[in-house]
Length: 65
Image (tube, rainbow, N blue to C red; front, side, top):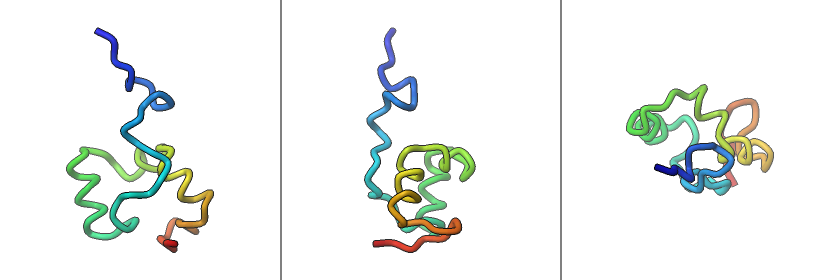
């Protein structure tokens, strides 16, 4: 069976645009829990990296738009 989302760079379920709850909010941590994901793993995703590059997250704190 082929899984086109197997590699992170091919995965389209994590977009580059932040459509998640505010970083480090209660809702955000609930989202991570539901995804069975650690914060350290989330920080490797394109959506986090892009948010840092865009200035939405600075010094690991949510700045927002």
